[in-house]
Length: 255
Image (cartoon, rainbow, N blue to C red):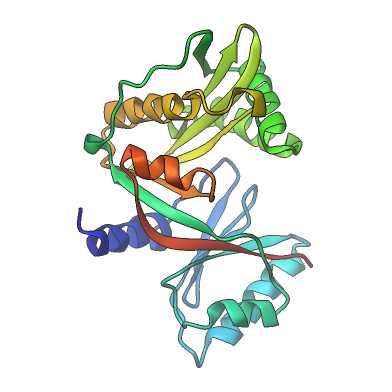
């Protein structure tokens, strides 16, 4: 896998040519910036130089502030200018912890990892399934995200071809869950979630959820899986065949 080629393809398909990532999301291209406004409020791409970066940042702050919206500037490690992160902080943005963008060709990943004994993987197809998924998410990550649950149910209802979600059940108890985001017309499918309730970690559930989504990506004809990996999942993903491509840091602006 030529990492430079894959990174250039990712930048073009997933950032410069970004499509709305949910119902009610609008994508706009203004003065070297690609932004999403709606359910998701994010600057996903920028092509800036030192002379114009501060002006472009100020313009996005004005845009979202006029709407009364918190938003994210998703900064990648190779974005320019090189001091864009410093400029964002100077403009009032607060960075969340950095993650690692990792990718793998679907054809090179195992799709034959099964969950451990006593655990079954169940597709999420309705409101009851979303409720189980969010129960697992809330316990695994230690935070309640009711707005995420509403967004996922909305996507399942209105745009079912753009997402597949799955929950891991031990008996009737949700212990993990994950989803794969599907962007038609691109080579990349994205892995999200995968958090496991503490008592069930280390048993292979995460690997089984990755394999489940590998099968989905292969069936749908995607060439690559990509994931924003936190520190705890990065070693697992490396062992499964994923390679670091760059870093990504969410810079948050709150009006």
